Length: 140
Image (tube, rainbow, N blue to C red; front, top):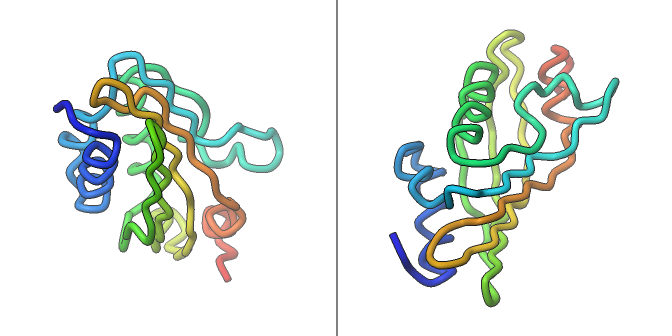
């Protein structure tokens, strides 16, 4: 699945927002570093899918935990910026926490580093407060 940074990023985001996990995982390098926030005890550690993973198998495990907690509703790529081997996608998501039935809406950024047609580093940025409110059953 070799391609330019733009081609890889566009393919990744199309698979992700289209719910095609198998295709999305195909864009990841075998040695991917996947950084989904840093757990902060007493704050965002109620989001059991966050942390750093290495390799597609760990990423898949993390995604399974996320999908066990959250029903993903609407997820859209809002903007994509590509420069060199870096791509940043701004995404919108509206989803529901299964246990509480509470909806959350967020915008978040995924920063991808692409080499040899694969994503070698993935890092996500967002304000998790709306997710945490939904987990706690206090969504706005």
